[in-house]
Image (cartoon, rainbow over all chains, first blue to last red; front, side, top):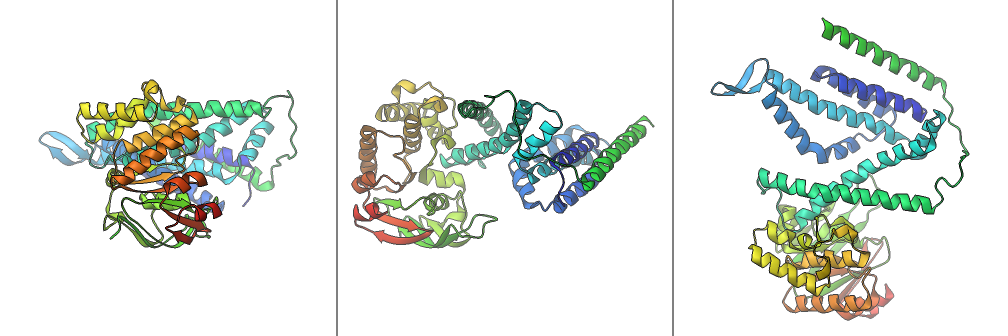
Length: 245
Length: 230
């Protein structure tokens, strides 16, 4: 199925918004199922989600453990003396946090089903200033760059003979926190170089831009643009009502 | 038994149909400088990444010091094989140049005095002494290249894999690198260097392997002629 990039952006907003709102694994799993179905419709390779999530696996495990330990509720499954360590509520909260990350990442993959040029064009046709649209597209392009940068650093550290698996957690955290600054600064330097390169190629030389192509909504776009936001608003209202009661 | 053995190795990138490397059979001994040459896209860098375990072969086996490479962690490989990336930006991650050179040693539990002594030596040798406190990514391309090489050599690995080590180096610094690599080779350590710099290969390499379209088309002990042809 071929949809307008703007339609897909609305879908991503709806799915991510609901993922941030929900905190129970059941609902988040349903949301994940919808997201995966959408990705399959757009013929997205689901294996790529795994590779995007892989570098964040340790963070997700960390968040899961933290939630399990520090959000106790329900039945106690494991305790040390009077201190509950693992509870049913803690496990559900932990699973909810991890699922939320997975849903948001999977939903963002919908943005990868069209090219950056269409993304900018879509935003500009929504009257977003070109510079702002371009900035957003660059920011999206920088996310995988930043991820690759982190992967490169971890590989380079190990190739200097440091066995990260054997480094104690305390030392590992110190090492990572020291490496974080150069990685962020390196990304900033790259952004600076990109800005110079863009200006050298005449970015914003003329005040007005013209476009060869124009995006047009199809009937399918109108259907999705009606169904998705309507369903999302209905679910938000239902969720608020449930919380109120 | 060679130090690094590549047997019937083929490799294809995920979601690609065309193999990058096909049926590669190469053995690398200690104390020998081998140059890996060939046109762009012939699979040289991919082969070096397979040698250091960053990539895994689709079929075939790579052995390091007699043991399959898959049995080593990246850290264990890094202690035995020093790898200089094609792009130095990818391997510089510390806050200062001095820290970068001493990182491996400091994190492997070397005495502080030993680390400082070795850092001072390598900064001096690669003429980076004045940049000890500078952020590595602020250096020029040639300086970054020298730093990447110094940071790997400071670890004193048993074997070296250098991907385009002469890019960005002037003639004088190439000569310095050449002298040092020969010195390392004389001390009994082997190395593989990927290069398009035929003059450098001619002067340094004792063995030249030519890759084309992912296959070894020539493996020659003679130096000079084969590199020129590539």
